[in-house]
Amino acid sequence: GFWMGGCVKSAFSYAAGLAVIRRTAEADVVRLRRYEVPIKRVARNLCLDPALIAGIISQESRAGLLLDNGWDQDRQKYGLMQLTRQQYHPFGMWDSEEHINQGATILILAINEVRANHPTWTWDRQLR
Image 1 (cartoon, helix red, strand yellow):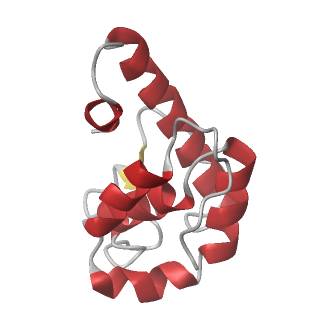
Image 2 (cartoon, one colour):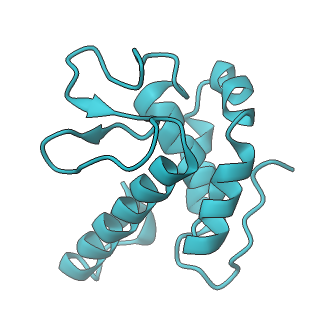
């Protein structure tokens, strides 16, 4: 299947990915298929669940549907994963593997920061 993760020992778990994907609009799944290969490759390289990346792409940009040439309406956020213009210089085209890799790397840093600051929280709460 599309959403199978590969890093069994990873804290960035399959169950957490599924929780995100459950909130994904069904309509986005069709658009997400075009990014299946880069999502899976980035996920494998970073030991993330591909469902987590796909869920964020769905949530942030409806898998590209809401974007104008990669930008949001206010032209402040860019790409499938909607990186903010102020914080990050975006890598690659808005729907490229480089962009997905950058967004997923930022995600890991953010999750690790939350985990360090709130070690007693459950994994689900840390992820939220």
